[in-house]
Amino acid sequence: MQATPNDVHILPAPGASPTIVRAPRRKTNPFRLGGEPSPALYRTLAISTFALVLALWCFLSYGGKVSPLILPTPSAVVESAIRLWSAGELWLDIKISVFRIAAGFLASAVLAIPLGILIGAYKGVEASQEPLNGFIRYIPVPALIPLVMVAAGIGEPAKILLIFLGTYFQMVIIVADVTRLVPKDLLNAARTLGARPRQVLFNVLLPATLPGLMETCRTMIGWAWTYLVIAEVVATDSGLGYRIMKAQRFLRTDEIFVGILVLGLLGLATDMIFKWLQPRLLSWAEMGRNG
Image (cartoon, rainbow, N blue to C red; front, side, top):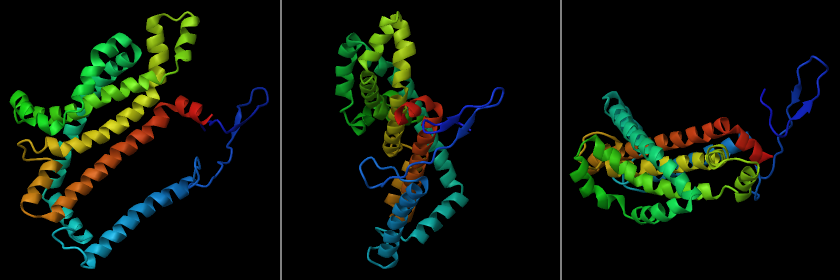
């Protein structure tokens, strides 16, 4: 059993294994500042929010409060999803959209994280790179579509490039800010103990930025999903964004809802994966935070 900061360690007899007694988790009011609910209450609150939205949807659609052309019923959306899945269209759209998101986001992270760390660590790099990145990140990605089509054509590279452009420049600035948050005293202490500049960078600064980098990636992959529909408008015949735009042309609101809901579920899944990985890959950071 893995120990936590609140656990009680009982000293063993000579030759025996140590015993860890799991300390009871303190429950506090979840609606109080800094309060922490129990896991069961947390799940109940999360599920209740979705149930409330579903109940409102049912009331408005089945009750005839809103036209089916604007708000189809949940059953119509489910039937549409089953039909698209049975035809193999929905699964194909999911696969190609996930591939585009993964390729664009990974390319962005591989290039943006090292540059962002250098900008945050060295003032010379900051002066030469941050103003330009700050300028480009305010250019709307849709305005770049004509240039992307000229440079990369209308194939897969163009769609991946649009997702890359939508996340790269933002990620550089956020990573730089995360790097600047590392306490200067920590770096000075390493230098005082005789660490060379390379050791300060790789053995002190980089580990200290890892929790922030994980949160940055979690945020930026959410941005990548928002740019997917923009990317899939560029001369394509597949993907969830294309499915939504095609359904809009034929006023198939139920298919629009299918695409929107699948995008939301996939985005939520990637967010939960990052949330699940962080305490497992960076357990030392979680222990320090809780301690």
